[in-house]
Length: 256
Image (cartoon, rainbow, N blue to C red):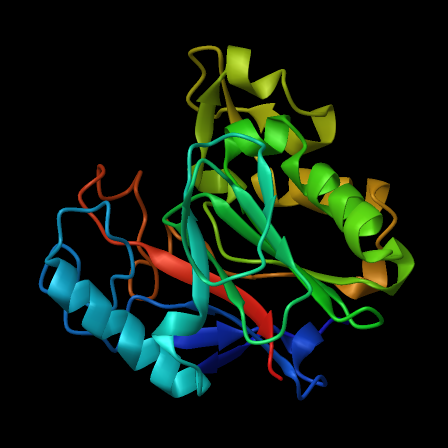
């Protein structure tokens, strides 16, 4: 039986990554910050309508827990696409939904509130990847493309990689149209109990299957047992909160 992730103050640590002392990785929770409702309390997303100063303070609190600096973060304005950036310096970028790096002390950051964060670690070549996998990115196989780019840029061997599929909206809470559902394998969709030609989509399973097809062994893949929509005490959910909510941040990097 696979281990469950560890819950720390303000964030989750994937159990799969816990044996690597030089690796910093996790997904923030909504608890332990200073944002007021509807963003209470550890909102890390600037595109939410929350006070930017408060968001910066939240990020600083999280970084302090992780023993890193906010200036070491790298992130992108996400566009629900499949573009991937190799990051060589921290800071803000635009138009990418996956980031990779082999540079130490750069912490790749992905912001979500129902979409899935996927974190990849190559312990042989000391390289990492962070993926924003909503339904559009998953349909476009952004995880497969990210692992492939790591192979080309860092000589990554997928068999050596470890991957964490973080918390997103689970299948029982995620109803989509038939048009969206047919973009995914039958193993990732079931008919909605409510009918109306709708389906319940399992994005975690879709990304799991893509990691397997990329060559990462099943024993090296961990999935969060939580759901953003159903675990309202721990996570923001765009769908549950009708868009008026915060964002979690998932990050990964190698400490020098």
